[in-house]
Image (cartoon, rainbow, N blue to C red; front, side):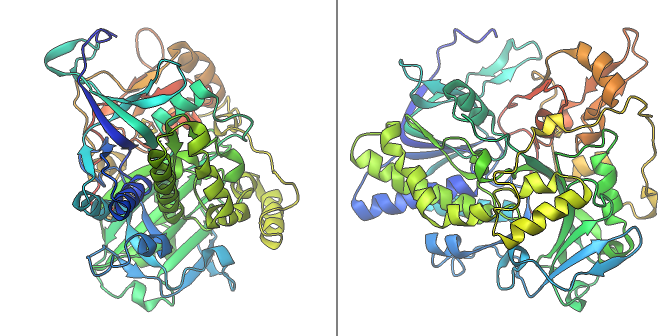
Length: 558
Ligand code: SF4
């Protein structure tokens, strides 16, 4: 790194939130409300790697709205963007040709009366509310390094990204060094598999003896329908699907939620504990969409936006310690999620609000050490968050089990409110779940002829285009393959280079004709920042580094 000796500007704030998602924004808003009530003069900043707040927030989601209304009781009067309200739930099992509506919807998936949101829109609106209260939001700034104090353990802030490096990391004429943002308390709310969270957990040993994290990747779309009342003909407007194209073999499913303006949010979710090395995520997504029942709901529609993101679904037993000296972890970075209910935005917001209350107490007593911030963990433990997460504490670990065994565990957990047959139910890290497939044959065709309805079934590259993803091409590649030799030999032989199939953006390509032998080419400009590659590579051979702030997707409505 040729920028190590550069003098950097420093900026000091009382509290720094990293990542402008619902957890951080709820936390920042709550902190300013408390400061106003108690006459505290606080400098609160939020940095966001997306070009604007909401640009990297991807989720058409059902929101349990209580935390939102607790935070901002007049949210609806203030124009909070709610897409629709859930009129009814439908749970379907899909075979290859048919859809069977299950007579009972599990209690976790009963959403009647809750609200359907676009996470991108909601976070943008929360950002406006936060700014109106005096929070300084800096979009386009990625946190790339956690700063530690002289003791090597106290977190004192975050360094932001250098802008204007060339491919070899040499500063160009327009180089702008990142700045050191110093804070009394640093709050990481980066979303699943946060880079800074990984750094700090590794350095401070925060993961301790917690179980291995588990993740899902979701490909999501907003589809504009031709007919306004297509979903209105159904008894439900929040639909969940199991079965085809994963069957009972691999973990995952799909959803369709009604949005406003005759739009649908459609999503396909795949548990990254899947086993089949040849599984192509984007192809399965297309298979899900082209199922006759799903197709009947979206026929004639046009995809307006597409995106992908992972979610940390491992649950309570996989969470790290949430505090250290000068540090709090919130949101999905820390693992706040209700896996059986397929939702976590409300828990993320609650975690941010409880962090804010903890920080206000710590600042008032001028003690931001771990022993002072630890009351955050107590608040989480004694409040509704932990009670809710207890029910889903073994869920993803059961979903990751194949066929009947998975259903037996899930049934037992349902009846025993989470405990199940074995508690805790052990899981294995997602990157170790693939079964070797030495005979894997490349070149299988997509299962659906895309040219039939190209606006409804965009191919993978068009999907990237519909996420408005962009990266400056001559910056350092932010995807690091540690040992390319593993790719060309061991990984190719044993798994057929699964990175070429699990990446929703089609970033990794195997060039088998290269003079030096097979080599993986990385089209990093197409990266959707979903983090699947860092999680699922079977040799843990890929690290996702934060590219220049402002790069990546530019979601507006997903
Ligand atoms: Fe996701 Fe990695 Fe592909 Fe980027 S390169 S889209 S982070 S899997």
